[in-house]
Length: 378
Image 1 (tube, rainbow, N blue to C red):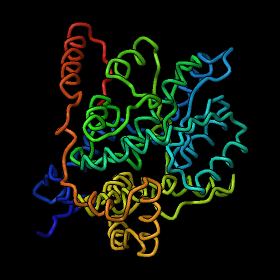
Image 2 (image 1 turned 60 degrees about the vertical axis):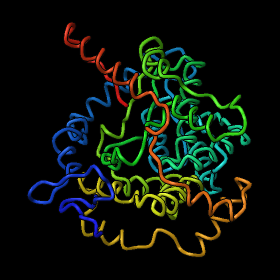
Image 3 (image 1 turned 120 degrees about the horizontal axis):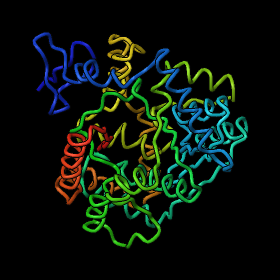
């Protein structure tokens, strides 16, 4: 069946929850205009908010070795954020989590950033035997979000290091300019340790002794309430244009761009450009381009033209499949069997959704009786 495409962006009916108005504009576009855009400040108001936050970070961090923490993957967003943090005079502890899938280009870019900014780096190398077992467990589960093993340990490590170093502010490269549209039906919460452990318990072969997870209590209560840790997204408080950021990185530190989105991680590149489209029919370029359309960084015609380009060069794909199999120590036949695993949803496994609903209810009651607003995001 031919997919229906939004008349404003390029999201289509590969998202089973998409809906369209009488003019053919999708719910994602309406949500951006009516809700998300109100949290996006690429203007003077954002500049004022950002200056206030920077001053606050410096004040709270006085006398400490570091006043904030940044997770650096080597991608454009986090690299540009590190560059800006240096210009703002902040003193971040830069953390890189090596989940075993770093591209050589990512390592080189990270080195260039650190040298230019003169920042301290702590690299946490994930135990590969555990990571491999967890990665295979997710592949065997057949759920769509195969990046959870990497994403969870990334944020888990940042929280643990922030606590150990008494750092209250986590600077995130996440931004609405390029990530405002992401279908809920395509992914599950990466921080759901209950879900992660359930999947590994069913399909894994060894215990996770060194892989540190974050519990529901830690994520929603311990870190934000008791430890008073705060996540700040500076790129939402400025006119952030990804192409311009890339040019600045190239001119300032000699940054080398990746041939494909998420080229800093061999696994993420392969997962998003092959595994996900082949098994689920999800093309991650659609929400990415759609986000850039609604933030006026790309025209719809440009996006449609780019979507006509192949996700993979056939030679590069074969090389990546060979590397993928070798890295996970599986045969090509094993790989073919993994590709045939029936698709499933994260909700097919135990998860923390019910706890989250209870927390949301408690939040609503608290706000109703006190008038104070609390932030609880899934």
